[in-house]
Image (spheres, rainbow, N blue to C red):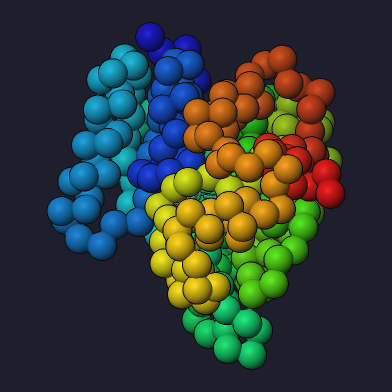
Length: 264
Ligand code: NAD
C-alpha cells in the first residue's frame, strides 16, 4: 500500500539502484525508475522491472530512460515524475559507471562520461527537484557515493574524483536545504556484487594473473576488514531509513557501509 510519497531513483534498473527502488516500494513509495537503455527491447525490459515492482508492492511506478549525460533529459524526467506521480519527496542519485586505467592511458571520453554520470547529473537532478521540495518544506536527497568518496585507489582517477566531488556537494545541499526541511546525505558502500563490479573481475584476473576467487579476496575485498560483499538489501534498508521523517537532524553526512574499509 502506498504511503503517499514519491521517490525518484536514478540508475534503478540494475544493482544497488534496483535494490533501493524495491526497498522503497516495499515501504510504500511510488517510484520513478530510471536507467540507460540502448534499444526498444532494453526499454521494454526496464519498463517491466518498474511495472512488476509496482504490482508486487501495490504502488505506482514509472520508468524514464533519461540519459544522465543529458541535462535536458534529466529535467524532462523530473517534470514527468512531478506531473504524473504528483511530487518528488525523495531523490536518490545512484546512476554511476566505472573505468579503470593508469592516468597516462585514461581515455578522455571515459573521464568525461564518469564526471557527467557520477557527478554532474546529481547537480541537474537536485536543481530540478529543489523547487518542489522547498515548496512542500520536505525533501530527502540521498547520494550513493562510495568508499572511494573518502579514500583513493590507484587507476580510478575519474571515479574517485567524481565521488569526492559529490561528498562536497552533499555538504553544500545540507546547508542550503536546512531552512526548508530538505536533508542531503551520502551512502558510501564498499564492494557490492553488482553488474558494475562483475564486469571488473575478468580485467582484474588478467592484470593480476589470478583466479576469480583470488581477485575477490585479495584485490577487491583487500581493503575491507570484513571480507564480504556489502548486500544490496542492506543498502536499501539504509536508504529507506534516511528517507524517513525521523532523520530530519541527519544532514550533510557521508555514511560508510564498507565493512571497515574507511576505518583504516
Ligand atoms: P550497475 O552497473 O549495476 O547499475 C548502474 C545503473 O546506472 C543502471 O541502472 C544503469 O542503467 C544506470 N546508468 C548508467 N549510465 C547511465 C546513464 N548515462 N543514464 C542513466 N542511467 C545510467 O551499478 P551499481 O554497482 O549498482 O552502482 C550503482 C551506484 O553505486 C554507482 O553510482 C556506483 O558508483 C555506486 N557504488 C557501487 C559499488 C559496487 O561495489 N557495486 C560500490 C560503491 C558505490
